[in-house]
Length: 162
Image 1 (cartoon, rainbow, N blue to C red):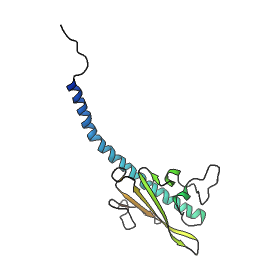
Image 2 (cartoon, rainbow, N blue to C red):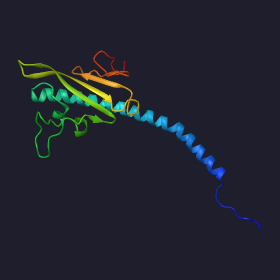
Image 3 (cartoon, one colour):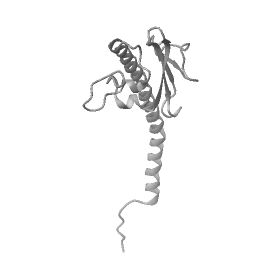
């Protein structure tokens, strides 16, 4: 009597699972590196967007640079743009977190004579170093974006692209 066998043997299934695991072991690290590179590119672009928004804010409102990222966010629906909600960046970026990076803004160089802020510093740090990014970024009113791979970036680090 002949048995009709259908399906796969256990050995065949184990071989297929082993092949899939090998492919995943190769693909996942590459995916993570690609994701970190995308997050880092997004952080650089976000710094450029904020720097451009700061120049626009400075010239539009005549109060110097903004005092926070929140001042650059869109106004409430039905409201006009003002120095407290200039509408120059999106709500996500104004919240200080985007694409695996945290943004920290500080106003600097206050002049009591003119009642204006003439400087700012802006940091972009990975929210989870090694997973969301491996580079820390810095920029200020000079609009030069600087990077550091070991510590929080500062004005003394190399410019991006050098």
